[in-house]
Every structure is written in structure tokens, then in C-alpha cells.
Image (cartoon, rainbow, N blue to C red):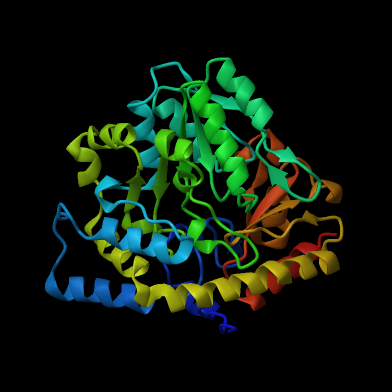
Amino acid sequence: MSVAPLQALPLEQLRQRTSTKWRKYGDDVLPLFVAETDYPQAPAITAALTRAVALGDTGYTSPDPGVAGAYAAFAQRRFGWSPDPARIRTTCDVMMAVVEILRHTISPGERVIVTPPVYPPFFECVPEAGGVVERVPLVDLGTAWELDLAGIEAAFAGGARAILLCNPHNPTGTVHARETLAALAEIAAAHGAIVISDEIHAPLTHHDATFTPFLDASPVAARIGYAVVSASKAFNLAGLKCALMVTADDATTATVRSLPDEVEWRTGLFGALAAVAAFSEESDPWLDAQLAALDRNRLLLAELLAEHVPAARYRIPDAGFLAWVDLAGAGWGDNPAVKIRREAKVAFHLGPFFGAEGKGHVRINFGCSPELLTEAIRRVGSLV
């Protein structure tokens, strides 16, 4: 059964927001850079937060706000995976979770693999945890990207102790196959290493792809893996601060349980309340409607680029609302987003921030109205 796409809020209403997307640049710039979406909030979330404000329920987060159970039920409905709520602990956000897990699983100076082009904070959270970044770029197959398993194995053989996996991958939107994840687990286990899987974009996997939670990829993955998840990307809750650390083995669970209590105290109460509502079955229709809107826009973007920026190279993503676009052929330099913002008044994310592989690229947020997306690409086309 087809689902009607969720409608984005009008531009004049969006400009009343005070978040980074709408306040970093002036009103003459169309903001399609940071990962915030333009849709009205899911009704269940609005109701939960409205009730909390009315009650003055703005204190400390309770020891068990219900997020673990809500996520476990969500994962079963959406992914066919049943994590144990008793093996889930919360914290402030996904990158904080990554840092805290790394601090307790690597020694200072040990290397941690990242797979660029990749979410820029990956390059920062490794040294924050005392590690050293080791780059093993994705393999570009011409039609898709995949993990360089041979390169990853070589890095582990050379002493790397962990890998930060982006699953689904940001910025390419790649959903890694179950077989690939299982092979990665075998490689890591053979070298006594761990995998930390950032699965924040998983709820936004599109209908023509199948998301596999890393911990569900194989028994070995369950033994050596950690998953970090949040409702923040799928439900636009980044400002409310709640993420989950998920494990599936006694040893990894013990590691997460050994983290200081302060790590869990950093969970925002509103973040927890919103996450429970987001992961509830009541919010499934809203999420499906948003996915329908994003599916329409990921296809529309291909049409718009072909018409207005024919030099652009774009592969339709498997998940999310972020597009990785190669503009090297346009002749706008290593960081084309700068020229586009200055001359076309459209803000895209800076490609080189995602690693050297991002030269000549931009990341485009298409979690907006078709009209805004059309106007943005039309403006970029005026530079051609």
C-alpha cells in the first residue's frame, strides 16, 4: 500500500526555527547542509514534550526512562532484530557514546580505522578518546561503494584495535550487506579487535534496501560489536540529547556497564521522552510518510541535477536524506560548496570535511520540500 509523503513546513515557518540549519546563514541563503529535516514533528513526540512542559517535568532523567524497551520493540518491528533491553544503556549522543566506548577498549596511541569519505566527527572523536585515526577509504565500484575488507584486514594486521563503522554510511547513503558485515566481524575477531557501529541513519533505510544491524549480522559480530543508535536523525531530535549503546555479549555488555554513571546521567530527559515516543508504534505511520517524502526527493534530485548541473555525478542513496554529489567536473575547485554558497546562495556541506576523498564533492540535505530542493538546484545551475 502506498503512503502519502509527509509535507515539509513552509519556508517562512522554518525560518522561525533557531537551530543551526536556520541561523548559521542569512535569509538570502537556502540551507541544505547540516542534517536537520524540515518536516513537522511526529505527533506522538509533540504530545510527550507538551505534556512534560505542562507538568514542569524538566528535572533529571530517571534511571529507566523506557528508552531501551522502546528501541528493542522498534528494532524488532523495523529490522526483525530483537536486542535485549537489559544490554542497552543511554547517554547524551552517538559521538559521546563512541568516545566513551573507545576509552574503555583501546589504549592511548592505538589506531582506530575509519572509512572515508565519512561523517567528519569520526576524525575528531578518535583522538578525543586517545586513539589515532587510520584511514581505509571506501572502494568506489563506479556504481556503488563498499568497505575495503582487504585494506581493513591489513590495518588490523598492522595493529589497529578498532573500527568505526558507519552503517548506513554517511555521506554516501550506502547500506552494507549482511555478508559484508559478517566478513568484517570475522576479520576483526581474528585480530582481537572490535567494531563500533554507528547506526543512527538505520530507521531511514529506503524500501529498495535492507538494513542489517551489525550485532545481528552473525554470532561473531554479536560477540565483538557495539552499536550506537539514536532517534535523532530519523525524527529530527538532535537538540534533545539521547543515544543508546547496544551490546549482545557478556563481555561487551560488561564494558558498557563499567562506564561511569556520569555517562548515563548525560542523557537529556526531553531526549529520553522524545525517543520513547519516536520508537513507539504510534510513530510508525509518521516515519513511513517521511520515508515516502525522502524517496520522492532522492529521485527528484537526480532529475534536477541532470537538467541543471549535467557535470554532477550522483548515486541515489540506499538510506537517509543526504546526497553525496561529485562536482569535480564542474570546475569549481576542491571545495565547490564555498563558491555555491557565495554565488548561488545555497549552503551545502563541505566535501573535504569528509576526508581527502571529498575533494570536489558536496553533501546535499534533501530532507525538505520538493519546491525548496528545486529552487536550490536551479540556483546552482545558474553558475554553470
